[in-house]
Every structure is written in structure tokens, then in C-alpha cells.
Length: 280
Image (cartoon, rainbow, N blue to C red; front, side, top):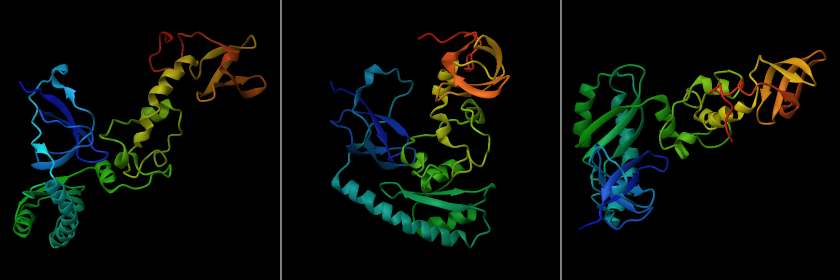
């Protein structure tokens, strides 16, 4: 009996991971050909194969079609080059139509049976007539896929305010939810322009330290609460979680003191899950 394994496949270096089944002998970084909703595509094994029986799967996984051949890889590389020219051609055609859409990139399926054009638009676009002309020019199935600002930044790439390449285009497989509460939890100044990324949305990196701030703040008193400092009752006006400092209001003014210098009810902590101190 053939042993069926679970294979993790990605299609871009910072792309989402998809799962397939296989009985082929494959290892991490091997190139494979799989059939997706878009058609035949070239992917890469992102981690070592796992025994599929270890997972409780709700649906049957598609099988990997084959390990990529030299010809498959050559076709893929040619398709990448051809897609660049296809994007230029498509932009020229779109310019002749009264449609509000900005093309961002283009991809061919491995067998070139389909070409996908990604675009952004603030409006709903009626591109029925455009599709007809594109089908004649490219002689294959056409998909026009609308993407949002975050996806556009991921596709195009760029440099973040930190001076490094955008996280979405280099290391994030998929987007996580980011909220303004994460900025508040990290006690950042709520200046939307400064905490927004190249996409115009809240920066993905706001999520990176959110959990550790929530955990660490369980060691601190709430802002606005009363604590004991040098046997005096004082008010907490701020926190510096990174340096273990508490900002308090005393008769001599507002000062920072070490967390270990104050006493307070540990049940009245500044963490999100207030009520009980965290056990260590």
C-alpha cells in the first residue's frame, strides 16, 4: 500500500501555504506541479512531508501532479518574462476603455491556458467588452482579479518606514488582522499617518509585539490607578513596559520609578485579561 503524505506547497517566497497529498518521494525546496483553482501551477515544497494520518482533515486534498521537470521550470521562467510583456499590452488596451482600474501585475498558469491580471479600483468595473478584446489578443482564458491595497503592496513591494523591505512582500504568507487597539495596547501615539504602511492601512508589524505587551502589562498597575510608593499613595500616569518603569504623580511632580519600587493590587493589573495575576 502506498504511503500518502501531506505536502505544504507555496507559490511565492512570501506566499500563503497550501496543502496537497502525495505518494511521491519529495523533500523541502523541491519544485512540484499542482492543479489549483486557477489551473496548473509550479510550486515549491515549503517543509518536509508529514504523515497525513496525523491530521484530521475535513476535505480530501488534491494530489500533487508531478515533481517538476526541467521543462516545467523552463516554461515557468518563460511565462514570467511573457507576463511582463502581457501586462504592458493589457495596459495599452485598457487605456482605450472608459474603465477606472489600475493594473498591478500579471501571471500565467504553467500551461498558459489562462492569464490572470490583477488590478485595483475604487469602483465596480464593467469590463465585459474589455474581456472580449483581451481574449482575442491573448488567445487563452482571461481572469481580471480585483485586489485590495494590502495585496497591491505585497505584489509591488517597497521599503517600509523602518528602512527595510515591506514585511508583506518578504515574510508574511498571509495577512493577519490589525486593529487600532494594538497601537493603544503598545501605548503608541495614535497618529494614523505614522502607524500606517505603504498600503495606507495599519502597519502589519503592530501585531508582532502586541501579545508580549499584553503579557508584560499584567505585571504593571493600571494607568489611573493608585499605588504605594515610599509609603505614600500616588497616581499612575503612564508605563514604560520595555524598561520596567512606572510613571507616577507625586507631590514633587511627575517622575518615573522602577516597577519594583511600587506596591499595588496584582489583581488590578494593566493587562488585557484583567482580574487575576498571571501564573509563572
